[in-house]
Length: 538
Image (cartoon, rainbow, N blue to C red; front, side, top):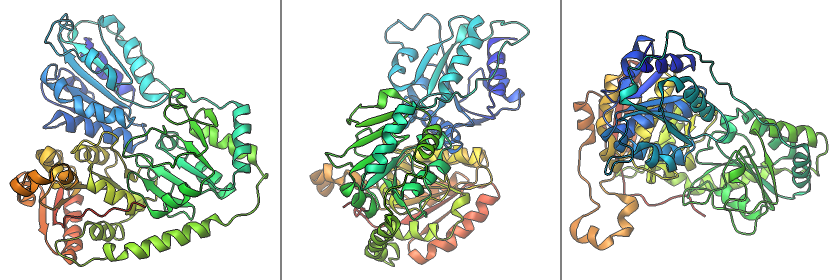
């Protein structure tokens, strides 16, 4: 058995069912021979996004794997790995590379250059270490704060003999319980708070802690907001749900953050960037996380608990028990603010204007699909801000929110990976014309792979989010203006496609798209959209 055959066997033992890849990688055929299906992408960054979609849509129960060539392949994949690092997603990256060139300029040094955008990175310097190195890789993928892991495979060792038997046992997840003293401290803070707010991140989903989060919220009548990556960790049709936040959010998020006297972060990093919830200054923060490095990172904490979100939440529930404070009808206040907000936005959500209002399309789709059996994601920029606010998620991982580094194009790979891992679910992607320009050719990857995804492209003919940065150049030279018939491009790539220019035409086209998707043909609906710069920000 040679090195790549051994790695293929390890992937099989670890439950890997699919590999995302680019051709000329020595692992593709050994994996295929073991029944691990290869999906060949057109662009490495999209392949990493597909691996992301597998990991993210299964809460890491399946690990997404991407195989890239050495040299150009590693360089092309850099952006995708940076994205999954920013979003803390466990993805295994296995590039090839030459031995003895890692200190030769200008050779691209994978281990050195990916060191700042991976949770753990190494190369296999001795074939005999294969079991040890892969065990450490999967340990890092399954435990602690998630993130991408890279193992570089040196070309000269790929056919090296590693023996007839493989000494490898799959890595199990290890969970850490909280310190009882910290639990007592936080429980008392919760009981004493007059207006606490729970700020939940995607760590809740990786821990499988949604039931415990709901139970704690109901026990103390605490309203719950989520981060963009944490959206769907808490059911948004629940009476205590405030919704998710990027720069935009439902009005209830802003309302309760302003009046909160205690904010409890659970499974979130409390990082500060333009696409994380805007926490007003001076708020008291409690941080519950499995990564001590995130505590007191950018925001000071009055208390913290280190541990697995599911175990910590259960410990808090047990500690609080029947010691409830005075009864507060928080749900009534949430409902009042939400109803006021929806009344304000209903003209947008039901608009008949032409060009088409994007909010109308989102509202129409949401009310015509089974949200508990649908996975939806978005692109960076306007589609994210429009969707995160008004799409009501009802089941964990029904919404794949992303974008701390906000690369245009990541959503297409993400939804393809989600469809691979969840073939029976309706998988929807919303993108703009600018993001289609980045990755649109990989629609053909979905065609070739028979992935029945449905993509809605909002074509407003302009790079909307960038216009303000170059108003003179746009006005005089049309620098932000785009042209293109993306429906025809999609048809040319083998997808089912329609272009719609009136809002009432969308749902009939969507129903046809669903039939195509059921038959394994990806579908794309191009919506001739307005240049909409209105977002839910208060």
